[in-house]
Figure 1 (cartoon, rainbow, N blue to C red):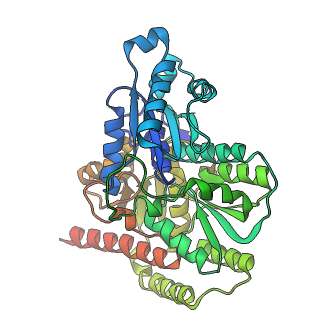
Figure 2 (figure 1 turned 120 degrees about the horizontal axis):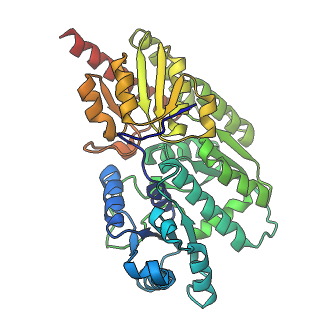
Figure 3 (figure 1 turned 30 degrees about the horizontal axis):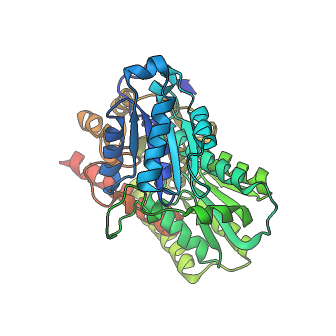
Length: 433
């Protein structure tokens, strides 16, 4: 795996944004970003522009005095104010690169706050360092999910609980849209299984009309339901980044964890539906059988469009792996990719993959590419190189309906086939002109 030593035109999204995004999937949660003044505005604005929804987020700014006297008092005052003003069910103090540079021990600050009588038994309070100089949105999202799982396990006391055979934990990776999560919940529920999705962005950032105003997340998995995850029969992790959280549940409660690298494509969907069929002892519904037939017919229709095409992408590791496995099915000539950070899942990537930036993507486009897939950060580069561009990943700006796009399951794969196929056809027409 080639790693670029210098980032010239980065598209990597901060771990802190991933952590904030994960907390939006837990009901009545409040992330507090501990960093430079103004960070919270940039983070909140970026997430809101992508999802077109309000984001729960507060800020603790580091001042000159913190360099001398430490920031313990500032962080504890922020926690106390947030608990008093908003009364969240879950609150997380998120450290950034600046916090680490100052040497602030957020975990110790939270322990001191709780030991001094701060908080209450109903509120889950935790801290996590998510510096910008390592990882990406994917790692921040996964680490925050893991931190919440660990906190729930600690609060449960490790007591053995009776398992429910028809209850399933779902750990959706950050490359899945709220629409994807909603689709997965519907698919799993169609087998008569109860689904506990954590985080659950499908009920918080998918678009809803609620009365009133609040500084907390307005959807997601409630805290009392989080306790029930230790009574499930199994855990389904979608994306390799979510495996660690699933293994934590497995180690604490003996609940087996099954990892699916992706749920896009015929082979991946067949494996997933067969797993659910064996788990529930229920046959696949007629609706999904028809969707599979439609997908097969669509793949035949699109064969001439995809044959011989060269596609490049700049996405998070889990997203790249899922996309590469599916594109191999539809018969493209090559798939080359740039990842923002290293990841174990990239060892299974089918094609050329490097750790780099948008400068590397432009070089790939110059050497020949029919389609550029990536976040809105890469759109200008694609235009400069005259390469067709399809927005995907995070962030996607200036477009409607992004959170509701579905690319999982048989139906979602068919939709994705159409979106990419139409982008290729449009590029051919433009070249012909």
